[in-house]
Length: 343
Image (cartoon, rainbow, N blue to C red; front, side, top):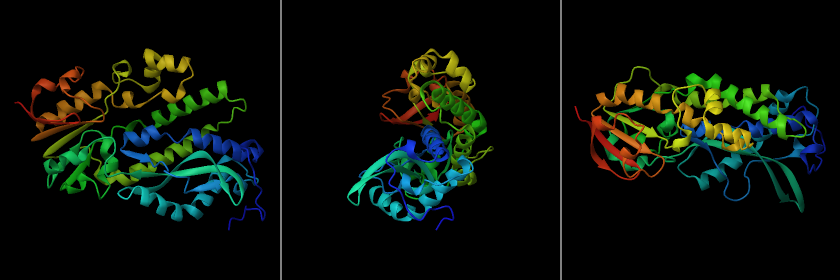
């Protein structure tokens, strides 16, 4: 039992009635989960299907804390006490997923013991057998082969033992996202602070805790995929997992803040306070970087496979891909294109 825990648990029905330090910590954590970054690595937070298996009532969190980091540790302590049972439930819902010891926090209320309980839920990070990209369709193409992932968008699947990538003799990953970790974290902190300063009556956001929590996500992901990350790849099959973004969000290889301010779509979202629509994906997976990676590694491959997260009948429709004519198409579907270098 925690040395901080009070003997009696109050039934707190609103976050405003919590200790102010814990209130600030919770609001900060909820806004700092950066699920988009998890998705860009091929991981995602699992959504509950019925109820919330990992739920902590506010009454378990109402003590005195010296700062928000101590409050965060208290939240993790409470989650750790109940997560094993909760994970069993998630496993029944997602039998091929491999849950990871990192969580996104959300507000949640439920009826329990004849009354209402209000608090926070913890949704686990996980790697799935297949998620944004249909890698099951290429299992035969990669079985027993050395595979290079040109982007980290399938990193989550590369560590899932149920995935088609597990059939490859080896998997290597080019991770250009982690090289921009500090920039990504700084940008999301700016975004969250900007939102709270303008639209939160309490202005409750702790940048230091937000940074700690975001860095924790990066650390967890990097620790899992680091054995596969390379800077000097050697492969038989090269795979490009390609997120297909709207043309009005496409940018070159520029900084996140520059893109958010110079691209009309992003700048308009900021002006209209649609912060939840602001992304880093089109900036990290920018067209210049993608084209450069294909030119450097794809043209030297025995087989080049393009996977898209959206239906793309023909790659020629994505005219920002400068290398299309340097390959010949062997097989294609709406989500999978199998090519070979034409020279």
